[in-house]
Length: 365
Ligand code: HEM
Image 1: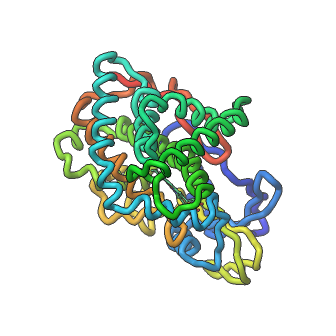
Image 2 (image 1 turned 180 degrees about the vertical axis):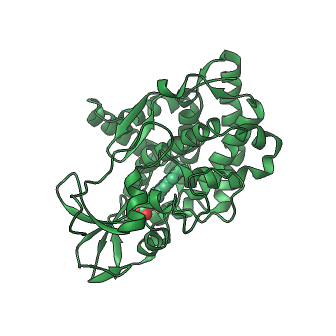
Image 3 (image 1 turned 90 degrees about the vertical axis):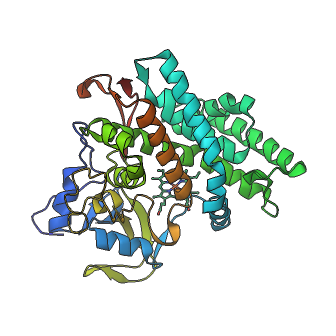
């Protein structure tokens, strides 16, 4: 650490004005690309901010992750999201997006897009994947909301009810296999339960948050919606750019632990030391992305790290991509005159230590 620098606490506070990332990322990338920081727990970690270094850490097995789900469950997830399986979900995603927008159009303007579109879309797709019957969706959605919203006092009860619901659903699907994830032959019941809970919470929340963020960025990007409306072939590249730019990234960094003495960009890292690979900072590195703070909807190539990289990268990426592409495609087609329904200053945010999340996305058309 340079002698003159004060101790750095991580995560940095996220600016609420505008769509920028914490200013510290830019300074560190230039001046101290592998920097020692202090975490909320008081522990120290090495924060890595340059694209090439972040990618190298994520792809290097000597930096071990602390997985949120066991390796067997992860394996099961990868088989669930092969391109072919995801393709089979496309008609369902189309139907869900179309139906939600039809309801929005019938009731508005104005409308609120998180409760009216992004959140029910992503949860309904996961329910479709798991084979949750339509009539149970609102019930399961209620438990999910309790699990992903901070500070809810009904969290323990929601977890317990969700677990027993999923256990009963798995048992039912095993008796009558119907091709859904839960009827996968050979998968252990506990693994299916663990995967189901992970998908219903984290998988749903990441996709809903990314879609909300993508729409917000488009609304702040003059001509963005009109461009995608007149050029639907540009949507896949636009989705990649919106994932790269994501100012509300679920978490700007991924924790790894060095399994042996090593180094990153010449900085020695001791065995057992924690390393934070800051993908949000990497995705805005000018050494990799020209004009990184601009949204360039046609940017190609776009090797962003929004889904991570290497062995741990997000197994749900094909599904998340399909959802984002289909949802944005429907949105720009059916609401080509969409605009923010309130001035920027009136948007309400929920700030979490590692990210900020929009509470409501009011729109007009
Ligand atoms: C745009 C939406 C999404 C984003 C940005 C995202 C991002 C990520 C990232 C960055 C990781 C790896 C973290 C690391 O390297 O430590 C991850 C892991 C994972 N994601 Fe996603 N994800 C998204 C959607 C989904 C969806 C839709 C699903 C499934 C339905 C899903 C399931 C998973 C699972 C099972 C893991 C593995 C967790 C582990 O191994 O511990 N994700 N995701």
